[in-house]
Length: 602
Image (tube, rainbow, N blue to C red):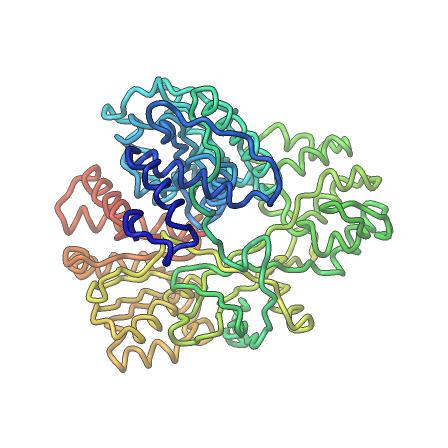
């Protein structure tokens, strides 16, 4: 309703007040009207009787000249979550801000920005996430504008166990500085337990932004709109789900234990899409916690502070700290505390240190260090427990208030002869049934999604537990009665014991939902065969599907499988498309930019 149409009968104002209001705003611009609406909203929130300081309207335009632009480069959702929190906090502080994914942002727009924050994760071996490839390339190109007017900040997310820790954030920082942009605050490189330091960095950054806006006369009095509502259940506030099913789906003869797991979401209201991940907060094995305590000479009854609360050290090891995987910083700290010659030598070789940390659990590092620690020393080397993310193996369109996972038990023999298991996988496989409930949340993955057009053909490559999201894809496509062809490549060790969800795939082939399926069982013949070999064998058909607009998806091991599949795709482009190596690499890269080549690798 327009102001001119108001009357004392249809509003809480009387006719005299309406007349005064109409006269007061008659000559205001749309921008001034927007400003004054925010001002009046702020007045309405002031308690009755409380004095209100007079506000002075700017002489020209009251709309802010500056806006904080927040970009996120995210592969699995962590960077997006941090960026969303920053955006919400900016709105609450009255700072004009917009939140944009890097793949929805045109690089040339940087020339018009005054204040920018980039929150970036790192993918693979120092690569930018799929949704940031184009911006990453643009900033290195001759098309990138001079940015002398731009004030920026970068927050990087990564895992220090990897060689190229936080590389994407470091790249963006270097690119922007080279183009003349000025950092507002120092870049922050975060490890896996990033929440606390990221929160402090956001507070510092927004304080600096607000100060700069105020200095230029662009301070906003009150937010013009409410902060966007967020999901009820999150990483910080997970849902307690009932465990319905935990069933081993590898045969007795398999040397791998893979489990199909189902949770009841009941009436939680949690929504997920095929391609999303389920975050699982797990509990460590109490037996392992006791062994670690014995190794460092502590009882476990000692009191420690965790998030401001006092808990026993033993309980903290079970619920709050990572005690399976180790990391380079932890090994370095242990070397200093123990003065172990072996550990000290490792710290002098970064590659060897990373390799050792990746294959060594905390208990084995402590055994090698052979040192007694007090509570403060011990707690100082611990890293906070973080949830594990698993690709969701179900479509909500079919299973409704359930969510399914395909979990492989991480289990191996340490060189000492002791058996070691992964923290989350052993919890889900062995101990979750006793607990009966598990704390979970959905991590949305916008970089691993079915095409919007149901007629689009798709090629899915998922060996081992990488098959999980493709079970969800086919359930979804069946429910949507999608007409697009579906081609699945699956690989594992043996046909007899490791053909995960075999009956389901056979039913989909029979119904016609699954157009083609190629399998590679590496140990069923003398020469090992993997999914990349099957891709090369089907090169002509793969190229034809891609030429017809097919989307291609890869899920599973990042260290070897994903690289081998990527190389096979480049070779297919070379041989079938008559392209040079450089042209083939560019073609595959364009598929990634166009979201026709999506990967969920770990």
